[in-house]
Amino acid sequence: MELTFLGTSAGKPTKERNVSAMALQFEQDNKWYLFDCGEATQHQILRSRLSLGRLDTIFITHMHGDHYYGLPGLLSSKKLDTAFRPLRIYGPKGIKKFLDCTLDHSLENLGYVLTIIEFEADETYRFDRFDLKVLALEHSVESFAFSIKEDAITNKINEKKLREIGLEPSRLYGELQKGHSVTFQGKLLEPREYMLEPIPGRSVIIAGDNSRPDVLGASLEGLDLLVHEATYTQEAYDHLAVKVMHTTAKVLGETVERYHVKNLIATHINPRYNTKSDTGVELIHDEIRSLYTGRLFIANDLDVYRLGRDGTLKRVHTYKR
Image (cartoon, rainbow, N blue to C red; front, side, top):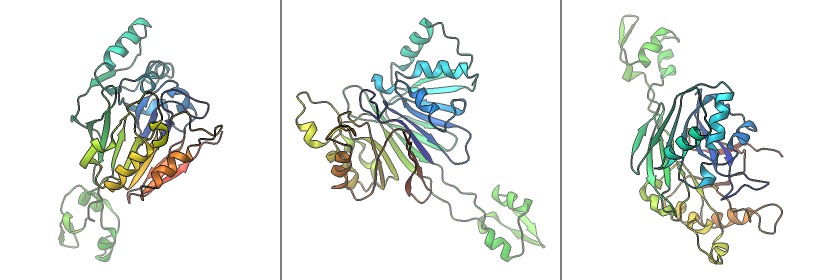
């Protein structure tokens, strides 16, 4: 499972970070999924290894512009690329009205099937390799997280055991994988006797803007990976003249430690944390690290992370400017 961060800034783009967007891919799959689509997401896709023609589904966390203003341009470019694969968009109430208005007034004829689904909290959707549940968050507008539970692998052949009885790889392996009994050298082989134990699917939550990570509650317990905003350090947030409904690094660190989250990627970084100022992104990192003992990364634009079946998270690609 790979995650490509296409935008990691909070509120507005900077020279170092674009606004929110992230891609998710599964191993040996010919499609990918996009979570949020801030302005200029299509530019970021061009700088990545992703192909717009293989985009299957878009999920929008909430109706703040830095999370969905990139949709009209992306949808139009998909047509210009002659990428006519059908596309689905899942979003909160209002996303259909926005897109209908934009496409109607621009006289855009997409040339492919676009399906728009407006969801509610606690709804569950089934996809090829995972189930997705919509979870409510706390923000200044309705905001949501997407809880992804990957299917377990249940059809792995115990090749070693089969070789021990003299059965080399053949079409009989395929029959056993399908759950069919087979006969070998006069002996009936039952599938359950020659299958490995199921490999559990990975669990991931990709969250939109949220002032209280603990609102996710039991969904966080033992989670393989949480992708969540860490917009401010606690000190910076405490000194804001006008409080906003965002998470601080301190609150995020306390929450993921309490619920034993295995891996955390923090994103949605306020523009004040940059390489040109005295307040670098390491302040976010260090505040979380002081409270959290799991694997921690602060996402940068065009970073690629791989979450293994064993729950190990690695950064496998960093974009060089």
